[in-house]
Amino acid sequence: MSSATDMSDPRDGGPDQAPGPGRSADPEPPPPGGVLWSLSGDIRALLMLPAALTLQVAHPAVGAGVDEHSVFRTDPWGRGERSLRSLQLWVYGGAQAAEEGRRLRVLHRTIRGTDTRGRRYHALTPANYAWVHATGFPVYQHAARYLIRPLTPAQERALYREWLQVGRILGIHDRDMPQTIEEFWPYWRKMLAEEIEATTVVRELIDVEQPVPPPDRGPWPLRAVLRALWPVLLPPLARSRRFFTIGLMPPDARAALGLPWSAEQEKRLRRTCAVLRAVVPVLPERLRYLPRARTARSVHRTAAPHG
Image 1 (cartoon, helix red, strand yellow):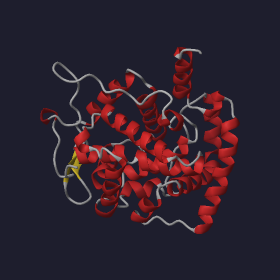
Image 2: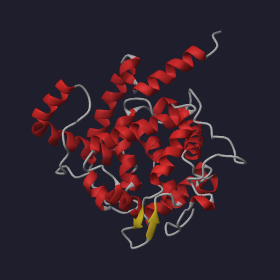
Image 3: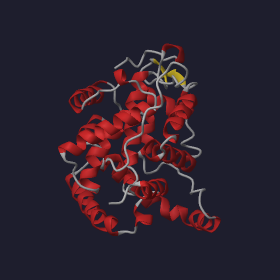
Image 4: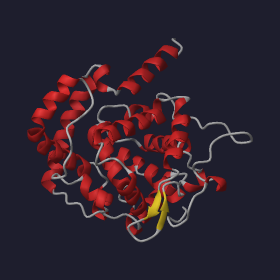
């Protein structure tokens, strides 16, 4: 992996290099019916995402970039909606997946500065960009044990292969990503030991006292009700956000960030997730899957040959 002090530039064939004359075709998104198709569109994945996002900004360069350039404080609901839309496009977007990857690379071209350790950073430096991507795999692998079911070794390998495909969609070169699970875990442990820290943004994301405006999306009557009830609703929602963020984070990452987690909290997490494992699978598909995933699954079923 490249050092976080290295600066990536499009002219050097960095992660914002887009397909064009003489270059290879767009990378393929993960296959329909694969492990990611089952995981990332399930509504329970919404509980997994905060752990991955928190790990992303635990990198000094990524945390500094978000701290200085993101609108997550002033527009948290819009920022969350755009992030979820982007993630769903990577997996279920078909031909739109690669286009979304190019859009993100263009968006990040101007994000640069100095990280929490005094090192220059650029959002598209391979080591930084690859870490943002890398956090998804261990969180999916760990959180699935609680919320859905433990993955078999074969499913874990399939998930990693599919996550590599997502990385290529994002413009990450194979040379900048561990290519096997056996290579991934030493990389993961090294990052936890040497790079990851409880940055300012990490602390804000798990702070139950952090101010969050009421939702500004959805039908206006609902927004009006939420705005009126927000002083009452926010405290328990903030506690739940912290609970699932820390609880669904891989334990070694949680320890690396110094985040507290008790045996009683672990028991409560297991009880809560047991209820979700029982309830969600019996919900109608329109309630169980996020809209883009639901649409993609329907199209795939329609296009599949019938025996």
